[in-house]
Length: 326
Image 1 (tube, helix red, strand yellow):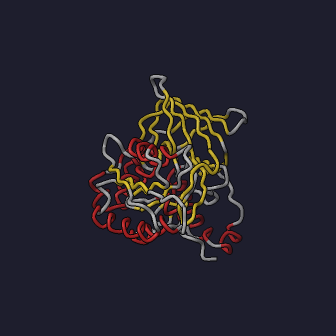
Image 2 (tube, rainbow, N blue to C red; image 1 turned 30 degrees about the vertical axis):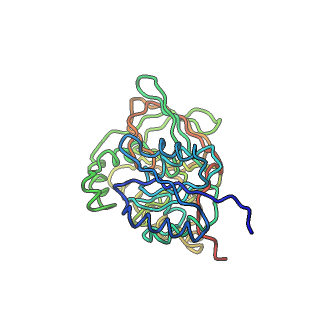
Image 3 (cartoon, rainbow, N blue to C red; image 1 turned 60 degrees about the horizontal axis):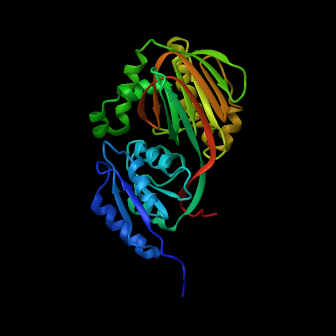
């Protein structure tokens, strides 16, 4: 007879994103089959997108946090779990599902995702942290698991029609991209990578990526890895219409198609920087801008920043994944 203490999971769910009855049935069945006790449930809201309820769940001593929601809910939950030795299980329920996508988890099979939560294994991944300085000199600190972006990237998020996003999903971003491309403003920044010298740059887009794959087979950062202790830095400054075409070909074709196979990587060769698109790797990145700039974290707008300091915390969070088959 086992003397193991029964384990309990907390389910943090976004009520807008899930079929609650179906979710409860799946969680109850898999928890019982795995010998876990009845799960505790917490609903997110506009005022608490995940941090508060996750903190409450952790205070109850739960053994796992299951998050059912979009990228914003996942980011908020992981931020609250930081520093706690508790795994996080993902039930992809949003438009992008970016972390689940980069972990190659099942995206459209909720029962299978729940089964993985109770029967899978843990994979430790890096956590991005960022301290944002505002125009009034105040500072706030946040986590990100996928990307932090400024310039065109952040403007795209700001310009996305939320009603269209609910109806059309990822396709809603196309309209936002077109609108953002009309914006002539560039980022003028002074930046420092790790402990290196200060540099200056003028770019359209600045992205720090913990992982690099987006929907529609877009691979922004082909070398980004979730558990290498680094984030990849991407800066773009295309020269006119031809420059944008070159960037798109590089991201959508070379990165998104060619580099996804071993033979393709060998064919494409090493990732090389050019005047349109530049990549770096870093464990720490500091930047200051000539004016306040829109910033986004994991697909959600976080207002305007005049400066920030970002760093990687290696292997900081454990995510449940299916047991490897080989």
